[in-house]
Image (tube, rainbow, N blue to C red):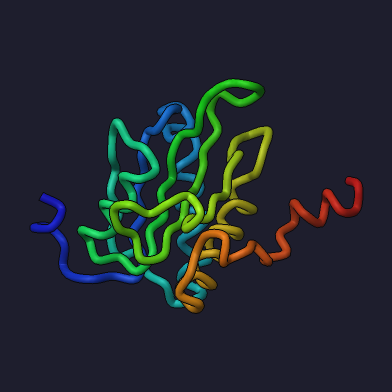
Length: 159
C-alpha cells in the first residue's frame, strides 16, 4: 500500500510510531514536528512523506523509508516507559534506510518529554543531524552530534 501511494524518491520521510509508549507519541510528537518543520525549511529540506504506524518498533522506520525511497528517515517513537518518564519520546535517524540496518547506523535523540529534552532543543538537534547526515551521506557512529545544542552548554556550565 505504501509503495502504491509513493510519488517517488524523497529526501526525508518521517514515521511516527507508538513504540513502547503510545502516551509519549500522543503528548509530544506533534509538538516536535511543529518545531522541526521551520528548521528543515530553513535548510531547504522538505518532508517528502509522513507515516503513522501502530505496533511500531524502530526498525519498521527503515523498512518504510526504503519502500518510500527516502534518503533519510526519522522515526519518532515512544520509548520504554519507566524510571522517571512514562511518556518519553525518541527520534531515530537513518541515512539510506533499508531492512537490516543496525543500531550503529542510526542516530538517536532521546528523552524528549516535559522533564527532559524540550521540543525546541530536540527539533534543533534532529534538524542538525538531518542536515549533516544528508550532506555527509551518513548517520550512526560516523555522525556525532556537534550541533552545540543548549543542553550540552547547560551541563558544561554546571547550570
